[in-house]
Length: 505
Ligand SMILES: Nc1ncnc2c1ncn2[C@@H]1O[C@H](COP(=O)(O)OP(=O)(O)OP(=O)(O)O)[C@@H](O)[C@H]1O
Ligand SMILES: [Mg+2]
Image (tube, rainbow, N blue to C red; front, side):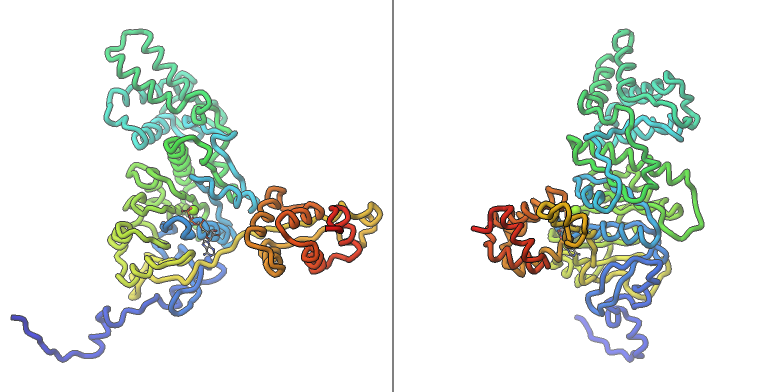
């Protein structure tokens, strides 16, 4: 039989019981940092407090972002990188699995490297590191990506041949390699193993053959992006502002993963060799967006960077549609989690289990629209408020997209040189879109017109523009009033129309 027991209790005792008094959001003092030293993200859902992020009050600068496709992960990452570059001059290296960032990076004036389409990486490069360590790293990548660990003899043969190739090229394998010295590549390693096979004295020829077969997958003619001289220098890229390493042209997931693992290994070495610094900024952010085994395997350097990055001002941002693809060690160690829309129960269970948020937050997450997020933060001090709250929306920014209408084709040479008539008109994308809407262009017409202008690098000759409008069903009177609204002179409008033959249309 159960008994109900009445107690006398002081009200301050009750207040300590968090289920009654737990505030729904952290206080403004924790959310709103010094604007010069933190990044604005968006406003909180309940109290509409502007939330600014800074690694300074968190356990570390690393971030995990999860959410279904279209939830706004990449949008968030872009916004974050741009603002970090304003505040701390932070460099960024994006390991771009699906090629999602390249056009944005190009537009923002950053560097785009396209592996498998022009650019290659020799995974045996050793500048500044010991060949013996690089050999271990390569074996580690093979361990993650293939089943070689189940074949110890093949593993030993491969490892030996890697080391021997360095020796043959004149390296001392246990000393840091000097700069500028050419490294061997996987084709040299394969050649060594083949020689051994041809000698015919080795006890287990089948093991040798299999070891060769495994390596060949990464060195086939036409797919030898990792067995050729490197065209890129990752150390340099890590301090070159905004950099996108586009992996989408590589023909298979394992190639993408091999590239990602190599890049992370190299960045880890750079991080360690640059050493610790007093500065309070954030030197480099490494972004891993959709990275399959690279974010999930215990042996991946994504985890090393999460464990050690803080003291070197190196931050890792991992984004994924499937939270279960992100290693627990990453979730439990990152200073900030952004959870965007998640629908699957199994993912909600996993996240709630590892981050321990309330059922209320869980239910919010399952109802999120684009750009909404729950934020889970690990503050440095143990504070008496929740580190979890909901953002109304991530307030992002896209780079300005300027469209130019070029009138020079309908002006005379003397008009151009006299400079009395405006020879081009520029519009920001949103502005132009709003004008189209104002003049009742259909959605289909608007997207076709933008697509065509994008193909012409966003600068279009006025006659082509008028033809494009006509092709999309915009009537001549409507075109005329549209052109007038841009401030184009009647005389010039007449000229434009006659140059397209539309004046009789
Ligand atoms: N906070 C936001 N405010 C306004 N628009 C947004 C926001 N977040 C995302 N969007 C828009 O929603 C669309 C999808 O966003 P995004 O590409 O970032 O999704 P994603 O989560 O990266 O998806 P995927 O997993 O398929 O890569 C984009 O057109 C983007 O511009
Ligand atoms: Mg994305």
